[in-house]
Length: 264
Image (tube, rainbow, N blue to C red; front, top):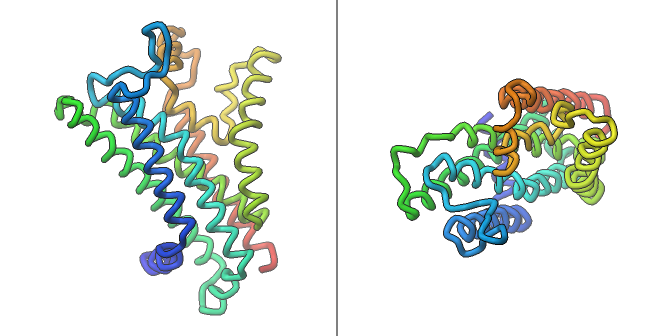
């Protein structure tokens, strides 16, 4: 496993797109969160803001992980580019010539997205820790609400696994990225609204592929709304987490079958 990861790292460390997109994610998330956390940019009007200054680290993890869940799409695009490049430039065949099995090639990509997910979660933790210390928050509250970081890890793995599976099926970066963006930003939103308003069915209970992870990290207004609803009327975090894990397992199985059954 370590050898597979080291080879993947050698492929990506000097890749300009890898550097640009990871830096873009880090900069955008940092600037956006810090600007709100320190009052440089308020989201709201009439003295009412959606994201106020956090009074404890629990508030930091709530807001920061919510923001990160939106910027993760940048890294999902990177995953799609990295995976489709293997097919477009035939480097997947070179791996086989060098002695890899198809399964090793497949697992190398999954190990890579696991590392991406861990790195994203770690970066988010360090950003929250730094902003909390600078903001004068008590270090004693550091782990209050820290389960949101765990949810962020699984959200990343869900998005990255979805992007990777699309890449295995379509093998073209433009097509894979187009479907990823269209589905994540448009299709799921339409399905959510359609089913909620036309069929009077709580769309959150549908557990759509990416939406079930998004429900783990809702915005402040959604959290406040949930708090007013009767107990049991909305699925709990563990239910959404279980659905997320189920989708990740399905991506793995679909991608593995795809690679095993198709020509290279």
